[in-house]
Length: 313
Length: 284
Image (cartoon, rainbow over all chains, first blue to last red; front, side, top):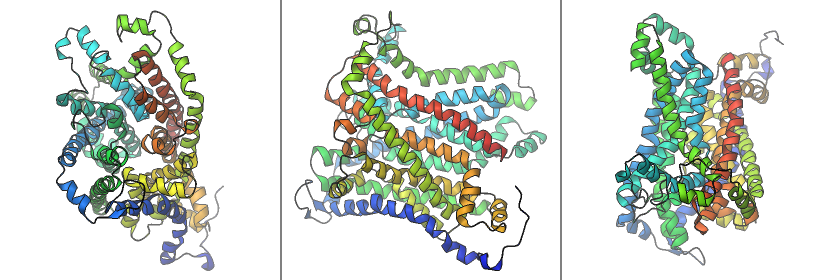
């Protein structure tokens, strides 16, 4: 039902300045929850990182000793080198592939062949994302198993038995194997996000481009990629951070091994918390990882808001 | 690139369409291959696996492995725990996300960047940075080893991502709609429920789906917080069992299949909601 347009009564008029405060009430539940679950525990964690503490008894204050120890710990540096490769596999490759696939599916398959076909492909590519990490680990741990695994069995079947490897147990291949699993796992997320983003793009833009004689690839780079920039930012931020935090897959697949070939910071922290009963050192690792993530996010957000400001009214 | 050339000529052509289709089909089949291999071997007798390897078709449907595994871990109980936790978190986190994003994205509060950082932080933090204090605090308030503790923690973590995403979506919310509602004398609460929420329903259902699946799949915190067997979720039960004892290949695939099936089922259910949501959104 359409109500007649009326000017608001003076009494109910909400000034611009007043509006700013009127919205604060909506933030309250979030803030309370956030304080209890995030802020307080995080501050406690930072506190613990300055202590020697086995998890029971009274923590002993030792200042920056844990951080000093970190700087001279080879495993710590290796874990960060490894995470660089994981970021490549979880953020960079899936975003590039996902952009291309989403554009092909949305713009070509959906329009020329049918939206149903496009959504079938989208679902297929997204399927690994719905799996619990623990199950991913069970599946791939078995497929990549050196003696009874499916991959080596397939290689032998097609006469490429010479290529068979101990995929997760050989230091030369373990990280690459984990990277391959992560690309498989992660690819569907950018495809879904980018296809949803492409729905937002005004069809008139495409029609105008068509009239100007723009080809598929030009429309992809000039319109699609440009219009879904917010989604690209979100995907890059979330996947990079997911890569920095990777734990479950490493835990189930390799436990950081062999040696330290797939050691990552979060697993390194976990080791100190629960295997070595060194909560102080574990907290220091977690704190450094947190700091890196916060700085990265801040930079991402700065770039994003600057872009919005450049494009905005 | 082939597609681009053809499109530029203005004639899609059959060859191009089938090339694209074949390429996509091969890629998708590669992605789905692990699921097929798991399904194939979950219904295979151990002797047959030993004799013919992982790729042979099962000679007969062997369901003993799955049934035995189901009762061994009381899988129905694990399913219920996972469902209860994931659904509660997804609903709670969407509600909190909408409230936050309404203030930040539409209210355009000052210090927007600071607020975004504030909420995003919760989603970004490595859970290792929270786990010890949360463990300690949950014991203090008597919530350790309870599903409620896991629900509260994940509602906060998921809502943080939702706030971040919805805030940028709400920033682009058509101002005319808001202004029209305000002209009609609707307050902020009414505008939220009568204008903003219905209009952004497609995005909210996408968020709900992500939250549900992400929570369902969580491993680290549930592993630490749900120590008693009757409170464990599906991934924790499977992960713990995997570590506890060596399983043979067919039991491994049977357990993997039990882990995969509910996740895939929920995904298929959500898939329809997503499609409906996107269609509804296009009409806007």
